[in-house]
Image 1 (cartoon, rainbow, N blue to C red):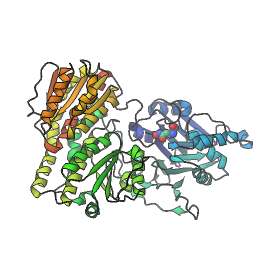
Image 2 (image 1 turned 60 degrees about the vertical axis):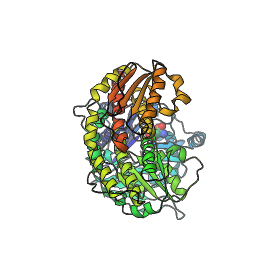
Image 3 (image 1 turned 45 degrees about the vertical axis):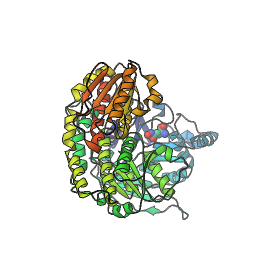
Image 4 (image 1 turned 90 degrees about the vertical axis):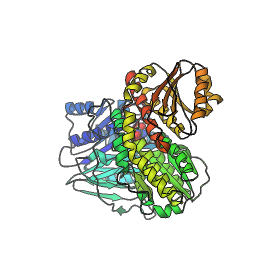
Length: 620
Ligand code: HGA
């Protein structure tokens, strides 16, 4: 999703800005741009192509400068087009307009300004002319309208008028020594260099430039100059006050990981799962609440239910965990889509453990849902997250950091299975703290978890068989996914993967629900993918498969080795290893990932950057 990079230095900062954008590219974007202060004017280049094209344009136009800002955009307001791409420029009005050649204020923005219509009308009435359909351009003109030779002051005043979420980076034609950043609701970090300072929406953008990072707080405004910076905190009754924020050493990994022998990052990440799970569980000698933080024992004793808040794939990992938490830890558990929870009336209970799940830890909807839960008096919070430096980890009392490594493919794979591993550990830790986990059970679960990397390798070896199915799926426009119990969320995740990257319409149902509606869709043209573990529901599931066959439906079944489901007319079977008990979802999701991946490849879609989607969804 949107990325911001900004810099103030004594050297030409354009290569740093573009390299920063490149590091953020994997998140998905539809256009990009860069602006610098050059020869007393604002200069910019913008493109709806990739950052490499922007780079070529910048060279051709001879754009260079000591201060500048850059952006990758994922459109929320206004089509993905050059005139909507950031940076946006303002121009002064009245006497100022005469002296304003190419613009006065340059600004990039992540987030959404909710009162943009009202502000636009006000600014238009004052003579400002709008050149884009974005909410962002409103901020550029607003800062311009408040500018009186001090950009920091103008930004402080402008943000008082903004409703919504923003991270912004701004500079001004008249003050070639400074870049101002501000954030509320969207992430922004300050990178401290030697005699130079940087801004970025993620420390990863600055990898190789500086590892000295300041995480700006909600409401912070930062003034960056060569060799110095200062931060103003959120406005209080006493006005704005300078604040100190700790400088942390952050070893951010570059997003530009090597593809190695793989065709796409998604394929690489699917095959990295044994390593990702192994790393996530590394060093766990026994189950203890401490795995989630020093205060976890006390927190676990103080709660009697769990509310999981998440979006997309993370939501499905939460749905899987509900089955574990209720059956193993006997903990009443509710799972809610974060964007729904934050806006509905709910009945809060302070004895609830709020569990947020997010790969990036910057998902705007999940962060907002967390804040909403806290505002309702639910103070016990825990996150399962893949980025230790993220806002989510900073905002939650307890955390389990998965070690999936940087995930570049927009469609999540290794982050999902690593989340499941973290959630299973949480289940065991809660069960233990409630006296529901014997030592023998603990040992048995730990043994199964440690064996997961090997079990996953055996599932990955099924790839050639999945490719054969994918070739048949490539010509379909619809698919049904069925699962029962613990594997129903896995069916949901399988359908989501297929939708996201192959653009085939896919829906998932609990198999027992088939006769209540979706059976009407079943024809010979409708592939029905079924997850068939050898669990307590197997016989029920077999009856559901008969219902599909009786209507001429074509079944594609991932069946555990010991289920005795055999291939036959209209019934294709890929044999999974023996049943893996409660951890079976971690194995069963893998062939569904492979099926989506190879179907998308056969259809020639842009697997790692599916249309309209972005990686870390940092806007509402
Ligand atoms: N609302 C702005 C920025 C969008 C954004 O932050 N995307 O991730 C726009 O549409 O340009």
